[in-house]
Image 1 (tube, rainbow over the protein chains, first blue to last red):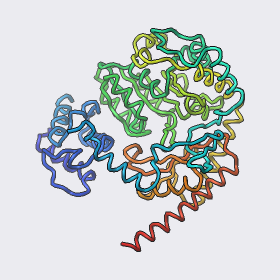
Image 2 (cartoon, rainbow over the protein chains, first blue to last red):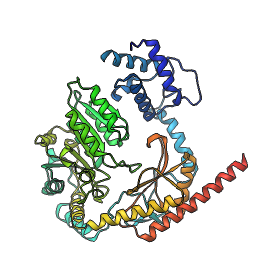
Image 3 (cartoon, each protein chain N blue to C red):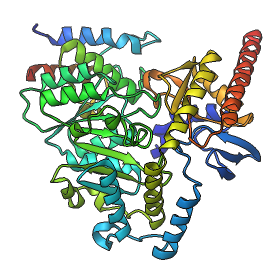
Image 4 (cartoon, chains in turn brown, red):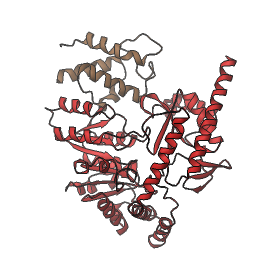
Length: 83
Length: 404
């Protein structure tokens, strides 16, 4: 299927829900560490869910540059375009 | 803003841990009495968290060989192998390890952590791809990062997930290295190595197995999980440590690859560190001989492991994996795990407290590791103390809920 940026964001927001026990409002600026209190392992586990959902690989070597939801969307779009 | 401000959150968590009793990450043993006992805060404690699987740290032959090596070769090597020279004992140990594992070559490192750093970062570079099990030890993650390779995690112990990811990479021309452990250090679960080997063969990639916790423990000759699964020929690189069943400090990598020796002048963690001390080398050589000569130690270890597994299961504790020399008991939350851990040590039993993010799936665990040197009476006592501590936990919880 053809993924649009909006659709990718929507899917990632869904995948973020288990990592959002306080149910805060998720925006592109939501910071995974500061706002969702995700540690490095949780971030890697989220990436694994994202990989399965979009059938892509997201090398964890890219994670140091991923801080917020927008960064995640950008990484996914970049990996999708490689496929 | 201080450099240390980034640790404020983790520091606050550490403060909460200490408020509940002892510091679980800074236990001081005033005196080591034997392979299975120490004095902590003036109290005799049974050690069930040492990874001293074969209990060889006080073996008189090994102690004598070590003392003799210090007299003969001195206390330290004062430098690196490449700049300051190799001692013949380093070379002898490397030959011993290669011979024991049936490999063409082995390289020795000052610690197991550095062995993973040196072998992984030596083998893989920025233009390569590493696929690693999600539950890999920190030393594997750090070695992977140091390599600069593209890092892809696959689901823990899932050959199918690895297969799927390798299939996605079929048009990618990078060299690929798959990394798994023989037995995982926190839960004690085994890798399905035969299935991983099948995937690795089909995709034509190389496989590294970290046998840190399985060397001396698995296989008819103690060579590890690869021996137990009869797939040693399909494992391209073995990494291991001296600080568990071998009762010393250090680590190694071993391989049949004819180019393996190139790592001696390309792997930075090998090149730019001090070489292992004569005492560590002598201990590892002596304990390796014991592993070969005394298979009964392994049998004793497994008897103890099964006894503790049964004892704790019968008491109703949730154990994370099948019986092995690592027995991880899952508690429902961090507060309970910390309370139990303190109660255990106060009653004379030391185990490891393992908390997220250092554990899989956010589990809060009391991790036990057995030794061949444990007596049946000690194993029984450990079960009794677990039962007492669990009762104390229930009482404490009741008091807490009454107060709320």
